Each structure stands twice: as C-alpha cells, then as structure tokens.
Amino acid sequence: MSTDDEQRIEAERDRQHEVRRQERIAANSRPRSHVGLVLFLMLLCLGLGVGAAIYALHRAGTGGMFGLLGDRLLSSRTETASAPMVVSQIQRLNRLETVQYSVDTVVEGHRTSSLSVLPDLLFGDRLLLVVHEQVFAGVDLSQLKPESVHVSGTAVQVDLPPSQIFSTRIDEAKTKVFARSTGLLVPVDPNLETDTRQTAETQVRDAATKDGILDTARSNARNSTESLLRGLGFQQVTVR
Image (cartoon, rainbow, N blue to C red; front, top):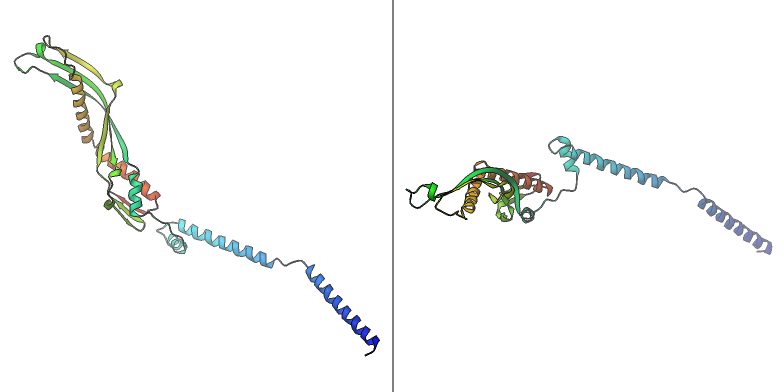
C-alpha cells in the first residue's frame, strides 16, 4: 500500500471519529424528556384520589352500602384495647364522684330526765338545729374486677361496682341552732348539739337515698365510663 493510500485511510478514520463525536455532543445537548416525571405525578394524583374516595365511603356510615364498601377497601383497622387495659383505664378514674345532693333540714335534739314524771321545764334540755348538708355519691371504680370486663373485638361489656355515698358535709356557715330550751334545774348539755348533728347526718343520708341519689350516681358513672370506652376505640359499648 502506498503512502498516499495510507494517508487517505487515516484521514477517513479521523473524519468518522469526528462525526461520531459531534453526534454525541448533539445528543447530550437535546432537551430531556419529561414523560417519566409527568407519568409519576399522574399516578400519585390517582392514588391520592382513590384514597380520598375510600375514606369518604368509610365516613358515609357503617350501616349503609357505601360505608360497608369503605370498610372493605380500607386496609387499616382500628386497634381496640384489651380487657386488662380496659380495667386499668377505668380503675384510674378511682372514686368517680358523679352527684352532689344538698338539703336543708330541721332536726330536734332532746334530753329528758330518767324519771318520766319530772317535767322538761325543770329537767329537760331541747334544741332545734337548722342544718344545711351536702351528700356526695358515686362509684368506686378502683374496685372494678377483671372478670367484670368482657372484650370481643370492637365490643365491650362492663359491670360496674355498686354506687355508694362517699361522704357528707355540713355547711357550718348555713347551719345554726334555731332554738334551745334548758330546764331550770339542769345544766346545759354540751354534747346535745354534737349528737343532734350526727342525727341530722343520718337523716340526710336516708333522705338522699330515698330521693334516688345512688341511682343517679350510677347512671352518671355509666355515661362517663361509656365515653371513656368509646375513646379507646370500641364501637359497641355496654355498661351495666
């Protein structure tokens, strides 16, 4: 092969190399396609739309066709509390004081002579006490027993402890001796007023019980416990 042929071949190789280099430069300088990004955004919007539609169906109500469809489509489920957790949460409410009963009453205190023939004018001691007293009642939920709680899925049944009167309190500012008469031949009995107050406390407790304070306390405790259980995720709640 002559020198001229070799030079032509080398020149042709250089020309082809330059053509390929120019093609690579031109390819890199072209605008990139956004088809992939657009497709990703479309899929993302579609997924969000489907999720919103399923949530709307679920919120439509658990009893209707759309509500049932939403429940079927939703993959996540609400986790409800176990029976031991329910017992613990209710017991934390401790002494749930749910009702307060206030009453004004007049109570008589009386001391007489051991000899009934002796008149009170000479040997008796009598007073009338006007008492304003408050009675507090509720349910001691710390006494709730584990066997009183039954959990089945999203349903729970709770048997509360009995309601009870927690305490009574005499309002000293509104309590006073209305009248007192002491016999001419006996000293004033210093314990008569204290004993009369105790009698008043017993009478007020009895009156509050007859007026249904324990039933009201239990009803209020049931409502409070039911609200707590629904907050824990239960849908069917029975509190007795």
